[in-house]
Length: 352
Image (tube, rainbow, N blue to C red; front, side, top):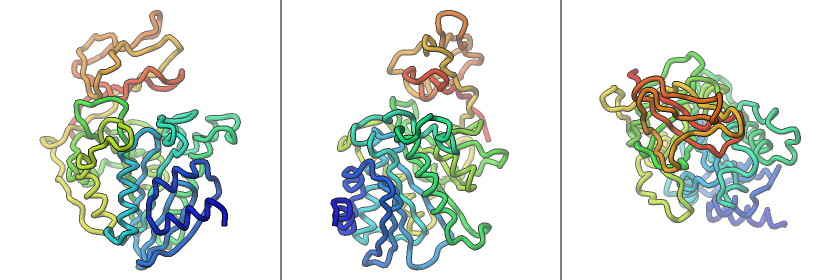
């Protein structure tokens, strides 16, 4: 028995998904299966990609992902505690469940990514993102995750109309936010926004919502577009190192996810515009050249708003962006991106 097999056996006893994943960050094609004493079937598709299936068939498929950016530790700790509680028979699984720690090598070095932003590579964008995917971990990882999710959502499904699929991609942000927790609801390709889906997050004490305006390379858009999953990118606060997260701060989303795992009714805050802050994307500001940058302090918060005419970004010459309307707000400002990627996203508040 090799080291990987021995650690898999140890994981079967402890349920410590994080420790197991940390040990074999670059494991590729290492699929394992087992059955727990409580009757749950467990399949490891690859390092950091775990499926748990109840003995009684379910038409609900719930995917909870974390660590797509390796330095975002709180979501990883949420997922790991869910796994430990399942193994300890403290959380009953009555649905088809997949748990993901997305980018183990970056997690182990405490960085957002190693070579490329994994959350820009889904929906097949990994195919053109690197000339040599064998030497680019994030490109290979996006392909592996897509293949695992496809199997999870489709294997054994006889009548797709009876299946309900969910995806909650948990993140934390690089910088502080005027609204600590918020949800990015991916573009629905013409489908209507589902207010009950938004209400799930309201029931988890998250009442700020961003509505996507175009197809994207994000994991949540991939699951929404490809599998019609009720999907969202869930931002839970600011990035902190392992051990420094106050897990009580995430109790709302943690408890609602656990209700779904038990196949119970989650807590819902019925949608109305008085109780929610809803924004739509007005424009992505793209880095036009190496000199192009946001003219903002490094500590500016997500959702900071500006007056009309404010010069927000410039390369000092021809390329610039001025705020077009009072109240436009920015999220994800970041000058440290390659040319062609966004340095920030401009929002405007709306009502649904």
